[in-house]
Amino acid sequence: MQTFKLTVNGQQKEVTADPGTPLLWILREDLKMTGTKYGCGIAACGACTVHLGGVPTRSCVVPISLVGNRPAVTIEAMADDPAGRAVQDAWVAEDVVQCGYCQSGQIMAAVALLKSVRKPTDKDIEESMGGNLCRCGTYVRIRQAIKTAAKQLA
Amino acid sequence: MNRSRAVTVPAILCALVVFAAWLAASPGSAEQSAKRNASDNPREVGLAAWQQIYSVMSHPRCINCHTAGNYPQQGDDRHRHFFNVVRGPEGKGVPALQCATCHQSSNADSTGVPGAEGWHLAPLTMRWQDANDKALPSSAVCRTVTDRSKNGGLDGAGLVKHHQTELVKWAWQPGLRNDGTARSVPPISYEQFMAATQDWVQAGMPCPQ
Image 1 (tube, each protein chain N blue to C red):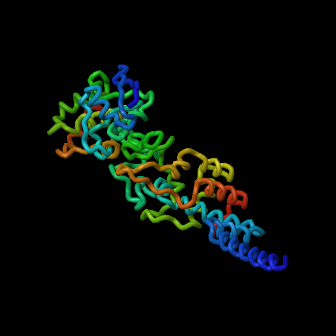
Image 2 (cartoon, rainbow over the protein chains, first blue to last red):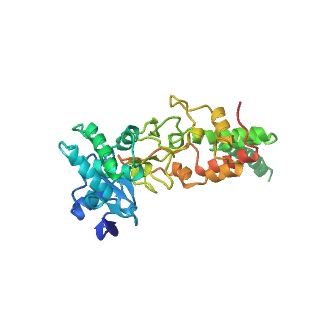
Image 3 (spheres, helix red, strand yellow):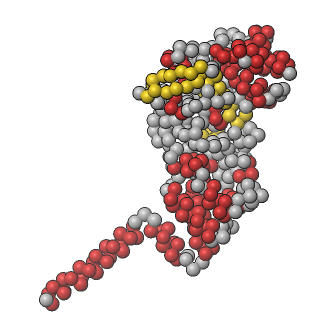
């Protein structure tokens, strides 16, 4: 066991954990921030996506020992982020969600895309969101909601 | 005294024969002897060294990121990278699905994700495969590697330096898969690879026909 200091959504946190513990379980189990979801555990579905040092990151495969001093931002902080707010509003407006389980990861990926590309094309959206799976098949609404959020941010 | 000499001479001869046999069977001896035989022909030395370099470059740990298409590969069977990963404009993925979305600055053995500083795909100009993901032959890879219009302007010294980067060295310390087993490594050691690189550069970087 080892003690790690990390910044999550702007707040300093300290946790004691095995160095190999994935960031996802630090967030969910140690910090009780359950907005970030466990889907597959092998980076295959994107449900666990957070931003680490500004990079959308699959928290299920990043051990706490490799986080370093990069600040983590999770779905819990998106309401206070202009792009995050726009995406969440668009998600509601386009009625994207069905079961909702994958949606925190979808929103984190969509925000990362919009922070990098202000007016994403269909190809931009398909490539960037291609690693986030939705078993309800809400992909068409996700694409529309990203375009709606992009218009709101323009 | 005479009797003693009569015993010693065959014993020495026998020891020499055993030593010669051991030398012939020892690892690297074929390579050393090829080098000796070709030592008066620098091109031959260089070509022999190149074949060693190619044995590394065509190994999955290296060639999986020197693809000809819009995606990297994974595994010893060199299958297309799972999870819809794409190359992106700079070989580092796309905004919401970057290489760094999973690959960190070092291997994550507890989760089975490989990593090293600067993880990225080689540019398309440095592809070592054809459009069907089949490894290009030694001669074609050699021509690509030595073409400064394709290799980022690297001369011999630049290629040696490239082989000393953390990303290249990673091939010999590729970490564990998510089932806890070790990834395979290239057929020769990193030290042998670097020695071959030096020999090849010194010989003028010859390429096979």
